[in-house]
Amino acid sequence: MTTEKVYYQDPYKQSITTKLVMQAQDENGRFYVVLEKTIFYPTGGGQPHDTGNINGVHVYEVEEMDGEIRHYVEQPIEIQNKIAGEIAWDRRFDHMQQHSGQHILSAAFEEVYGYKTVSFHLGKELCTIDLEIPNLTEEEANHTEELANKIILENRPIETKWITEAELSHYSLRKELSVSENIRLVIIPNFDYNGCGGTHPNSTGQVSSIKILNWEKHKNYIRLHFVCGNRVLKQLHEKQSVIQSLTTILNSPQGQMKDAANRLLQQSKELEKTVVELKAELLQYEARSHIANVQIIHERKVVQVIFKNRPISELQQLARSITNVTNDILVLLISENEDKLQLVCSRSKEINGNMNQLLKGVLPVINGRGGGNDSFAQGGGERTISAEQLMRELMDKSMD
Image 1 (cartoon, rainbow, N blue to C red):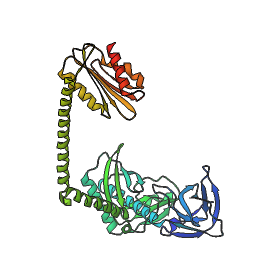
Image 2: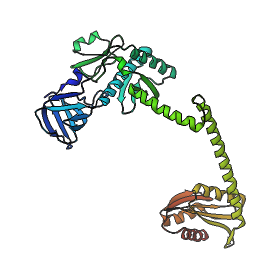
Image 3: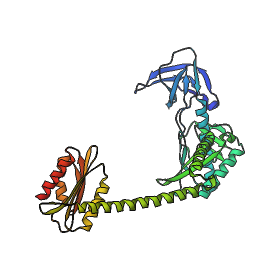
Image 4: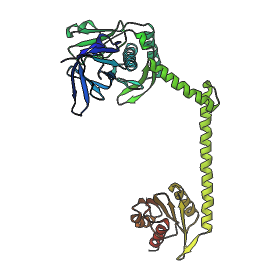
């Protein structure tokens, strides 16, 4: 049985009394009911489904299958002679505003620049359209947005009409239809003629406003993000709240926030540069300290140090700082972290040995990975043994 679609007769109708046709479970075990007539719009045409309740039971999804509209409910409903349904009106009206706003915006892009819309998505927070163009300028976006809001302000009627395929020649449609029967047109006279199965307000004024937020390249199209109606106010409120917070943080009025932020970023970059330079100086000082306290093991100078929770990047810098200023020293550094061990092996020019082979010789002990060349290598692995045991393994291997 085909469900009577009351949402087409009156998209403003928020509640209904009807009869239950069927109650069942789908192949996934989800409960659903089919009604004789419904005000619940099913997912389709880029517009999400309605939610609400039927006999007090929450309706969380609505789908149309071969003319049968399934209302998915959280639990079976109590079967009665009359079934009462109520939609979540705020959600429905939001969808009406966004969907009609998309019609207006797409028509405006085509009216001004001939840019065609190839797809539309109505999201929970934002809406998008994909424009069949490679690039979009700020001037084009602003000009189009201005026209779209002008159409809204004129409060033009939004009409719906069912026609046959033979009657299509009387209308200048914005895009080709995907159906050849049960054709429903949504019309803004002298501006937009579009085949659509969604719900819409009865005038453009109820869309309230349109705001383009941003756009980016997406495949071969431009994906444009926008909001309409009450979502514009929500975006304005959120952005104003952020701006108010930033004016306090930056100690600057809104008009000077950009300059204040740029100054802060520049100061941050300068401080980061200073920190890097100071760290380098500290590592040089540390390197000289280790060289001064070098050990002589088997007639070879060796620096062997174990650290706690030290980044391997610092171990690498320290090892290079030591070997760069001496010609006859072997450097073995280990950092012991919570659950892993990291190590660096480095040698000066006049020391024999292959650091990559030395590293690879101990990595199996800690289930580790790493590599390098004959003069410098680094790696890490699991903490299967203590750092002291790993250092002994390295020293033993270095003597081979």
